[in-house]
Image (cartoon, rainbow, N blue to C red; front, side):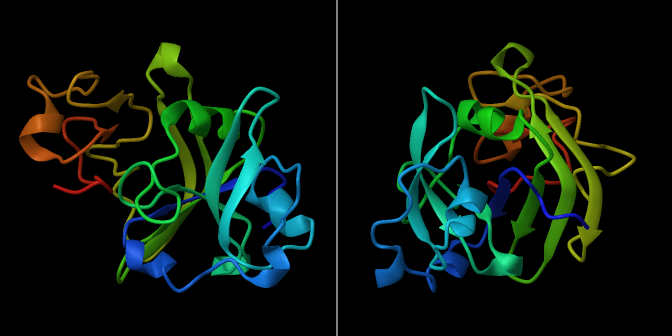
Length: 193
């Protein structure tokens, strides 16, 4: 597969997988200008950790860069929670849209005993409720997001207060612990049931 030119975005369901990585001395100052973690790595940094990236000319965010797993270059979008890129973190749909809109992006999902990846990953903007786009699955986790009987790819993001799924009720408060791309509640929710 060709090297990904744009960001690679990684979803970590099992947050302890990230705790073995730390920001080392050679990465202390890091690059001053980077669009994503692939840029961080291409500028010579080799240590996973929190870096400041410029995802657009107006938006700068602190993100966890995984520069070890599967060749590195991964911009972590979800470490099972919100707020702190060192611990529990969600990059947010607006930032995720900005990272994925400008080119081909790969998605890697790491769980405790399973994993999977999609060679193409993107979401739409807020006006389309951050609709999920995926293709090119590989891995041992099983492809529940693209499952033929109840695919979640192609569906809009739903939360407790914004019901965009195809279920007659709301998938979120009844069955799930957080927002996700639900179809009719779906077979997959990386935020938990």
